[in-house]
Image (cartoon, rainbow, N blue to C red; front, side, top):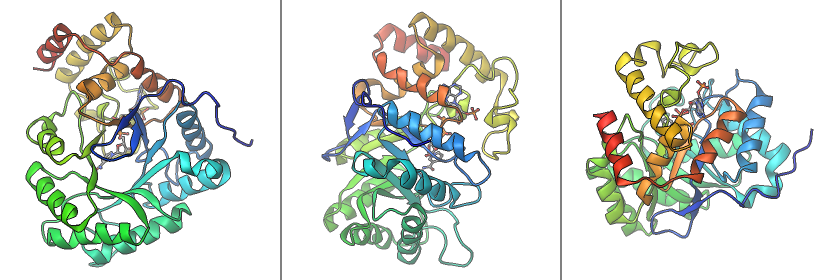
Length: 329
Ligand code: NDP
């Protein structure tokens, strides 16, 4: 079946300016960490991308190692792009990353110039893209000088292989230092990609302040705690959930009674606001316009539809915010 995008796709989504840049990102973005690999259903992956784009999601986030096997999410995205979305390339913001182990030997991991330049060249081949919109250093590298890693990001932009650069999983002080180097080189850091959710609030402890000072945008990954901030685990572990599947990143032991009690209370609050729980969790991440975009994952089209509707109610009263604090305490 050939694909034609929904012509109403820009009517409802919100687009937020990313830091001090001229780039806007959809308030909800889609990540390809799970459900886009070589062992996943290609037709389902394709349907997920179509439904996201039809609902106004313009930003798709990948990394060199997403799969499994590593690289296969980029390959599958490249196929979908070629087959269905090539005429929409300029409506898309596509990111990839390097920083985790990708190939054997000393040059396939962390943050050397050797690794980053070669990895992006591989990513461009796998996706069939001429350039990516955002290239990230995926995690800090304690043994490579920050000047070398930031120099590699700057080089990649000057070579035209990426339009913007970002940092992921960098702590506040490292971010500040990296940002200063990038500014000096003339390639300011566009965006930071940290984990952030109601259950994981480390960025409130300094990082958000640094991002504000430096004019860097942010995109929150795992905003639903891999599905924990939905109602799916309230009555056991469903067979078709991430916790029951082959992912090594969410285990049944992570789904504790304490968390489930909080989830149940948050769910009551979501219902009172006329929202689903994932909608409440995403609206909370986006509250106060500090975060540019919430980076969701999805295994089903219905989840994307559910999550995108979060933008219909992003406002909280101070009483609601206080009640959430009490539930999360
Ligand atoms: P989420 O916290 O959004 O979890 C997504 C999972 O939750 C889905 O795959 C689905 O799991 C479940 N889910 C989503 N929406 C609903 C819904 N409405 N109702 C019920 N269940 C739902 O994010 P991810 O953990 O997937 O991470 C998102 C992205 O963040 C990644 O794809 C990647 O791009 C990025 N990321 C970046 C990292 C980094 O180091 N920079 C690290 C990790 C992620 P189920 O299978 O159970 O249906």
